[in-house]
Length: 104
Image (tube, rainbow, N blue to C red; front, side, top):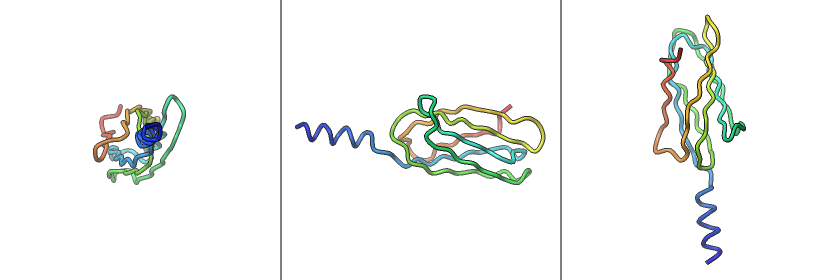
């Protein structure tokens, strides 16, 4: 019985593959993302794109189940960088999409 409990607990804590898409506006030249849990970074990704050519930016990562914060920094050809926080729930059903086009 104890072995079954340990096995069930391990299965719930086992890392899951998560797919995330970021949709920036055409003025964005760089997107930096840090994945945080309890304020600690557990992963990150950096994207670059040509200004005027917006496209979905995709990341695939493995994380244990939980609620994460995606700390996103948008860099534009002109103007200051913009920082955003979005919630990422793991496991997620399918692709998680963050639309960043309406960022201030």
